[in-house]
Structure formats: structure tokens, C-alpha cells
Image 1: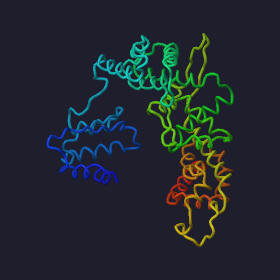
Image 2: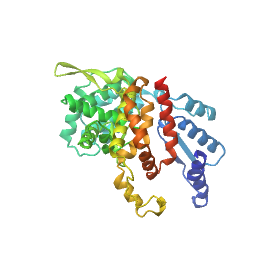
Image 3: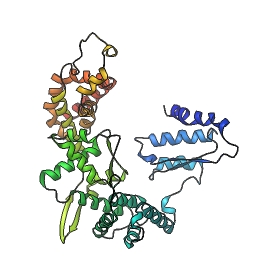
Length: 399
């Protein structure tokens, strides 16, 4: 599939454009960003096919810039192609990086470019662009216009609450800690727990979901979609919505949340020390989401869920079937049907006893309704694999 995509989307169109190119055709640069974020070995497979395609001479006059966090496989592939093909950011002179960050901050925070606080932010970034970019999104939210006075206030608040930190990952950890504290401070009890649970759900779902789905995957979904929207708004420096799905700007943020040594921290506010616990134990939250999926399916799955007129008609013969599916199978039910087993198999084995009733009820009462729903949403081919995954986990739990 990857070879075909490379050929159909890049090689063939580029070859067809030869006759239309001017005689003095300038070189084009294609940037492939964050190659390391492709799941499994997808980044290595993509790079291997790209290097082979370039080596075969099919993409002459094109240059490629590929960015990635340190990855041994990607580094080996690049080094095997050209020994000088790798540029490490930590090899770039510090003064050059600081000058670039200063230019970036002055462009993004143009109203504050002459303020002394901007120079302090450059120094605080200490060469980490992700630090500067995250600070910019906090000071000047993408979806809101901020007056100069408001931007300066946010910058002062951020700088004053951030003590000097060590270089490297501790810098971005300190920034994430402050952003989380500023977003969650003042919340107590169930308000704090509900919002934190929604944040963990955004990070643990098997695909990126909407605020309505994240809200629906809670123990008490009533009104939780609004809570989920508030979580994204308060964490606009690290989360954003695109095509109705919640995403994060950089992979370092979920890495931070999943590490308790980094995301459980002490913070000093008005001379008082607070212990803030923001970390997500993935196996525990996957168990929570598996229970949530079972609960959604138990409440919403039913016989002939789309009220089809006859079982003797093919799906293609049912008029307006797509509208019927959309109106009767909610997004949160669609998600639950597709991913309950993935969450189940990522829960810890000692959680097994808590799923006995859910699994029994599903297999005895709901499984045929589930197969029908999976067929209607176009995922029937996944049913066998999902049941096999669940069976393997159940066998492991029992023995």
C-alpha cells in the first residue's frame, strides 16, 4: 500500500509535470515533519520507500527535509543513504537557536516584541522551540483575540510562576506543569476529577475523538460534553480541535502525562505548596474506558437499531440507509463498538473480575446487536479479530 501511495501521489504526478516545467525550474523542498509519530514501524517503512525512490532517480529536482525525534532505525536509514544526511539540533550553535527563537517570538507576539519580558522568555526557552511554541499558544490563544495588556498579563503570570529549571526535558516538563496548574487550579473534588478524567480519555482513546465522544465515555455522561470543551479551552496551549477531533500539538505532552515522575509535582502558589497529581496510569484508564464502552453498548444497542423495514433487503437496497445509521448509531456508540476489546486487552490482568458481568451480559444478550451495528457502520470485517482479542485476554485472566 505504501509503495502504491508513493507512486500514485508523488512519483507519477511529478513525472507527468516534466513537460510543463519551465527551463529554469527552481528546486522544491518537501518537508515531512514528525516522522517518529507514525505508529509502529510506519516511519521507518515510509523513509525506506522514500530513500529507494530518490535513489532510483524518480524525484529529481526535489529535496526532502525530514524531521524526527531521535530514533535509531531512522538514523541508520539516513546514514546508509548519505553519511552527511543527518543534522542534530543539539549540534546547532546555541546562539543561532536563540536568535531563531527570538525571531519566532517577535513574529508571533508582535505586540510584545519590545517588552523586556520577551527577552526573558527567550532565555527561559534555552534553545527548545517546543517550549517557545507552547508558551506562545498560552499567551496568545489561537481561537481568541487578546489585547496587548492581556497578553502581557499572561506572559507575566507564566514567567512569575516558573522558576529557573535545568536544561533539556525538565524545561518542557516545568512549562507543562505550570500550564496544567493554571488550567486546573481552583477546581476541587468532582470538578477536578471530571476534568482530569476527560483529559486522560483524550489521550488514551484508540483514535482521536470529539468532545461529545469523550464526554460520553464517562461514568455520568450527562452534561459532560460541555466539560470536555472546557478542558480543551483551558488547555489551548497543548490541545486543539481539528475536524471535530481533539488533538495535541506535540507528542511530548502525552509522554509527560503518562509519566508519574514528571506529571505528579509540587507547586508553590502564594507561599503555599501544593501537590498536583495529573498523571494517567494507562492500564487503569483503559480498564475505565472498557467499562464505559460496555455501558454505552448496554444502554444503546438494540434489535434492528436502525428500524430497517425488512431483513430480506440488502443494505444497498435500503433507501436512505446512511441517514438512518447516522440518526440511530451515535458517535460514542460507534466508538464503543469498534474499540471495547482494545481497551479491555490493555487493562491489567487483575482487573478481570470486574469485567465478568459486563462480558457475560455482552455475549449472552448484546453480541448479535453488536454485529448488526458493526455491519451498519462498515466495520463488520473487524468483528472476528475483536472477539479473538477479547478471548485471548479472558483466557489469560482465568489462568
